[in-house]
Length: 385
Image (tube, rainbow, N blue to C red; front, side, top):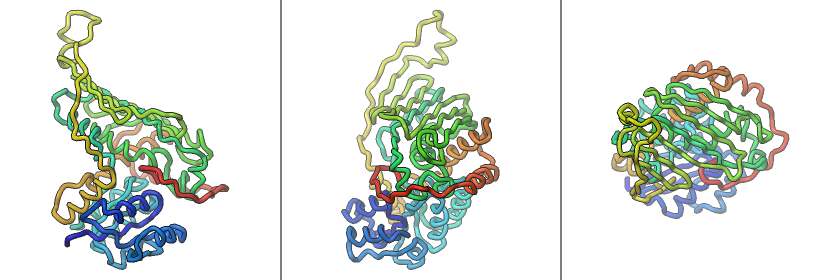
């Protein structure tokens, strides 16, 4: 095999973006051979925008069963991600899934178990892991050179969305169609990065506000408190209603502080470990000395194209993925924990009670109403459906 033949299931915002990247030759070891979508207008878009030799299917099952490709990319609404991944693996195909891995961890755990039984490649589209800034943060934290994490704060409130966005599809912002709001649609990348760089918390206490700023069923405003196994604490704040919003990610270490804001990374390095200084200093008010230092990165940020290139390289030559498929459950568990904590009105420990979460989610799904106002549209927004 010289090139991986890829089929895309779901050609909405992200699926169409991936298809255009492929036909423009941005992933040289991969070629687009098929696309599928339930909606006739999206298939018509494919007829007009994609080469004539690309096969069109009315649903993802038909695409998988056709065996016309070596791998599939799943870019459907959230609940369908695990089902299509499992079916593709059963048909002997490699699979890459858009975020999130699913809606609830019990279903995603079953997907991961299916992937373990398969010999095929399974990857997640966590394109933010390609960003040189986040890769540098991970490198510094994992080096241990600056001690343990003491505190994590991420204010990610620049996910602004209008009511028109939420009205653009019947599945958007409903428990039955989407399974959640800002946590499940906009923040999977942030939650993945948080656990990828800092590790998984052991306890979460969250306050989710449902339809606070928009006419929707699900959460559009969240504040969560996190506790980590080493005693570190964290705060995660997000919304789709702040303008202009903020994106500031801070990690305080024993011997320094990382700050990522506006795609720039700052690092303040202490001369000595603060824990040592605290108990050896003779003055009560003098902070340990330090200085801001310039960090060097490779500057690369290949995003979705980088993830697909790595996916092809794993299939063809066994090279490393940007994100293993099984890792998708981690950020989702953080999302599920925040919802569960808010629903129960108390902190929850991780791993969460998956059966209880599913029971409470299904209660909300059973009461999920049909939207009165739907204006079908395609908003080509980076990193979101």
